[in-house]
Amino acid sequence: MRPRIAWSCLVCLCACVAPSAEGDEAGESDETSAATSTDTGTSETGETSPTSGDETGEPPQPENLPSPTAACPTFSTTNVVFSPTEIAPRTVKLWVGDNPKPGGMLVIYWHAYGSDPAEAAYTLSPAVIDAILAEGGVVAAPYPADDVGEFPWFVVNNSPRLDDMILADEIVACALEQGVDPRHIHTSGMSAGGLQTVAFSMARSRYIASVTSFSGGAYTTLPFEDADNHFAAMIVHGGDNDIFGGVVNFKTLSLAWFNQLVGNGSFAFLCDHGGGHVVPPGYGASVANFFFAHPFGTEPSPYAGGLPGGFPVDCSL
Image (cartoon, rainbow, N blue to C red; front, side):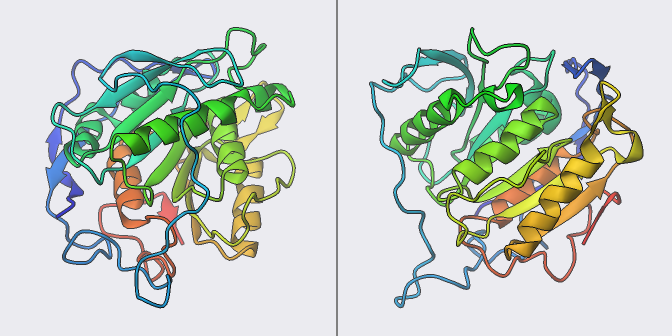
């Protein structure tokens, strides 16, 4: 049974140091430990009951999944180097369980400007990452390319280079070799990383299961790689003051992406934490539960009738 991450049994993260997010300090957070599934809309197996698939009743599967283009690194909780053949080698921070087992999720996390991959542990929390790992999952947070430019991701620098997407494909391919569930490929990120999260999910919509963006969105209407995959999205922003550099309004960008997804048939909802341009505290368990409840091809969403108890009050359908 896949557990739902409980909002009770709080774990104080005394050792957690928040990385900066676009120059702002993120607030401190208490997070949570694992518990049994209750009201996420999951079946007795813990997996969301799919409503679409083939005629045999099998759940839908992503097609044309990437294959490794080079030898995969050993997966362990450390910095590892991926070497896709099309780009220069890239370092990625991994979190991997001590006793890997098949069927877990992959979460690719893209950090903010002025931050680093350790931000993933702050945004999600160590307790939530541990719960993901306990179910056979992997969390991967790339480091930027050495020649990326001012911002950490090529798309945020308005560059046509696809290096970050190619790296993500290699991470996915190698994680699948480790036994990650192909129906549970997810992504998240904050600010510059939120913009990259959105761009990546659109550019790889053929295999993305569900997404959580923090202060993300898109400047323009991005094309879907596969518009038939109505991946679910949890879209978080900081309200009217979620502005970077005096000009980038992440509330506006988030709303634009929300409208695009809903217009294409995706289940999406907004969370306005009202705190401006920061990583909001206490969201990690909700993000993980959202991912657990939304594997690839989940339609309708088990959240369509209302968000589960314990979700941040800032979130609404």
